[in-house]
Each structure stands twice: as structure tokens, then as C-alpha cells.
Length: 347
Image 1 (cartoon, rainbow, N blue to C red):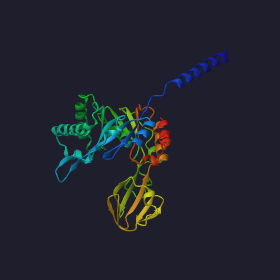
Image 2 (tube, rainbow, N blue to C red):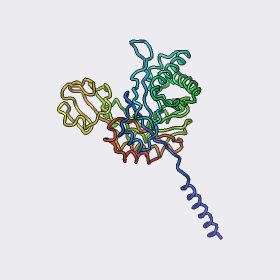
Image 3 (cartoon, rainbow, N blue to C red):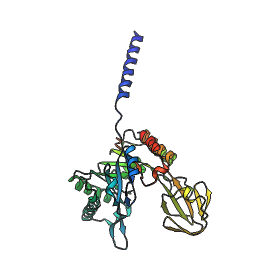
């Protein structure tokens, strides 16, 4: 009798596992971020994106910052769009707003005005697209405890205005904000996008890779249940971190070890670090003799590790979009199509 019961239970368990295995995997859509002022997708890039089944491009439309000279909040680095390569891509405008901006917004009327100006600026830049109304707009801001109240008030106002157009509002979320929502607050938006990078000590010369490391992200796990549905964006970029007299001065975007190795102006002092041997220009910036550069890169290995971390630790986040930051001409020379496919296939 006991054997019969055991056999029946085993059959039920086997059926349950079979049914579970046959359930369709939730569909996760693929996207890239574009963070340059000139948005132009070549025919070759179009084919690559189509082959990867990428259907959405999150494009930074402009920055918003406080201008000390003008004494006002201003838009900067506005995008220029070549529409030829965008016919099969949904475009989501992303607006980057500096945290210091909120220190100069003091009243409800200023919040209202800023929301109106940002929508008007987006409309003007999106006009050449000639497409139906935008379905989503995303705000990127690393808010703090001191800026939270004003920033969230702005998001509420912007969300109200976009709702009239049936347009959703999303916001980027940093790892520390995802880990400690009771401290940082949860932005009043329809969804968040978790930025799974920029997790190390950028300003410390001893840091190996502040963009992404397995140990740095693992230190945040496990995560609490977050009140918003979350998408995720993974890193595929490089930069040089410039130090002068022991202090971090600036970032030089898309700088790689290969760009400096063998150049007499730079002495390689370890696999990822260089010393400036002769004062010179690099990436439009003047470097002095004795300056130090640390090169940080997220290639295929780091990108795949980030994807696997997200798959393991964000199963209940309701992932709908997986994005990669960021698309630019020549990216496929650094990370192959097959490698991007490996990353997307994790989900």
C-alpha cells in the first residue's frame, strides 16, 4: 500500500514538473541604450540589430543641468537624429538630469515649468521622426536624500502630463536604491530600470573596475521585493579614469587599453594603468606629464556575468525589457553578434 501511495505521489510530482517545464518562458524584449548626441544607424548596424531581434532603442535626448553663468536650469547636449535607420525601432527618449539641478527648484510652479519645458524639448527633437506619439519617456537621475522630495514631485507632475498622452514614465534605479528602498524612497513612475553597473569606488586609484565586478554586485544580494516592476540594463562600455596629483579629474569615454599601448606618450605601468610621459591631448582633453590613467572595460565576459547575476537575483522583478548600454558605431568590433546573442539568451 505504501509503495502504491509513493508511486502515485511520484507520478503527480513528475506531471507537475512536466507541466512546469512546458510553460512558456515569459517573453523578455531586447533593447540597447544610445548615449551620443548624433543618432545615426548605418545599414550594417540595422542588419545587426534586426538579427539580434532588438526592437527598442533608449536614446539620450538631452541633459538637464544648472548653469551657474546663466543662473538657470538649461538643456545640454541635445540629440541630432538621422531617421533613416530607425524605421523598425521603437525610440524611447531618456533625459539625464543632474542631481544638483534639484537644489535650484524651490516651488511647485518651478516644478510645473520644468516639466512643461522638458516635454516641449522632447517634442521638438522627436518631430523629425514623424511617428505616432511616444509610448514611454525615461528619466535618469541619481537622486539623494536631500533631492528626493523635489525630484519625486517633478516625476509626479511629469507623469500626470504624460498620462494625458497615454505615455508612460519610467526612471533609472541604481543598485543601492534597489537594495534599500526604505531609505532612498521609490520614484512615482510606472516602472524602473535597474542599472547593473557603476558599482565600485570610481575615485579610488586602487579600484580595479568601478563599472562592474562580480564581487561588487554580489555584495548587494539578496534583494527585497521592490514596489515597482523592473527592467534591467547591462554594461558594454569602457572609459579611462584620469587622475592628477592623487585626485580623480574626469572620465574619457570609450578609451581602451589598445588605444594607448605602444604609444610613446604613455607608459604602461600595469595591465590597465598608464602614466602620461609627455603632456598631450587625448579625447579632446589636455593631459599633463605625470597624470595617471586607469582603463576600465566591460566586454563580453563582464556583460555575460552581469546577465547571469540579473537572471539569478531578479527572477521576481517582472523583467519585460533587457537593455545593453550602449550602442555605438564599432561596438560589434569589440563584442560579436554571437556574444550579444549569448547574453540576451540568458533571459
